[in-house]
Amino acid sequence: MERSIVLVALFAALIAALGLIPKIMLTSGVPITAQSLGIMLCGTVLGAKRGGAAALLFVLLTLAGLPLLAGGRGGLGLLASPTVGFIIGFPLAAFAAGWIMERFQRQNILVMGILASIVGGIIVLYIPGVLGMSAVLGKSLSDALVLMLPFITGDLIKAALAGFITQAIYRARPHLLLSRH
Amino acid sequence: MILLCVVTSLLFGISDPVSSVAIALCVILVYAALGFRFFLKGMRVLIGLWPFLILIGAWHIWLADYHQGIIILSRLISAVALANLVTMTTRLQDMIDFLVRVSRPARWFGLSPQAIGIAIALVIRFIPVLVARAQHLSLAYRARSGKRASWRIILPLVFSVLDDADNISNALRARGGV
Image (tube, rainbow over all chains, first blue to last red):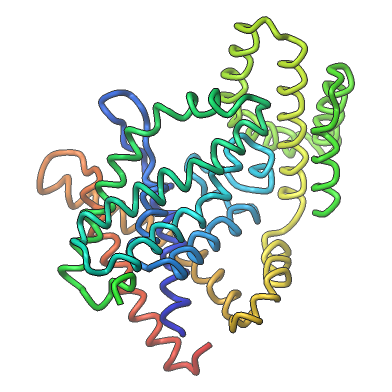
């Protein structure tokens, strides 16, 4: 019980820390922050329930006013900003990634880690994200999707990274990878 | 907070450019009424919105749909500014108390509000620790490789978090548990 709470809390802090470290510029000029990588890792390392809880805790604290979102944003104003769908989507994304990891225990961990990150961190995250964007900006869904396209390259790279990190953790500390129990 | 939800949803019902601009100006006037430094701090948050504002503005100029563009822009500004007003005038402790109170139904799933309080405290305590650790790791990486540390520091960072979690949960249990 204590261990679950501490892991959830520390991974929520990890999401925040990853959003606060300076961002990495891709060669294509699209800036990526590691924040969504943190969301993917929550799912693939902690599993569905704990990973989702960690992302939820992070989201609640940002809404409460801590400037933890990448770029130092925070507060209730986020609920009215175009990125509202992504914020709501964070816990769903972590949960989905964790669910896939738990569901396919037998498969290769690297492949599943990358796949779970893509499904959770990109597909599941983009659905509410694009919906929220089109609702707030009053655009059609396809227009909102086009706005998001430049970010997909970065997110694919992050998904691959999340897969490799998950595999490395599994090799070094197999008992700590809660999504494989 | 509930008031905020109501006002914001009303805001999305307004389809007249003159009144929506007027509302945006009113909200900004409230900021100004609370003092100069408060005003500056609030405006700095709004400046964070500019990539979206420019994007939407350019889009509507391109479509030559100025009417709709003005409504969306002023609606966005006033909604974000209003919500931010609540955050800026409420202390963090009050917001956390509110969260713990709202999360009381979580007890039905076997989670005590106390556990949630501890989790929140841990997050707040550990963010600066983790950021400092990330900086140490990247400095160490640069010292040895001469290159800029990029994603390579994330793996050791995650390991340190997992190991910390073990130590902290043991410490919590040793002090009586949650």
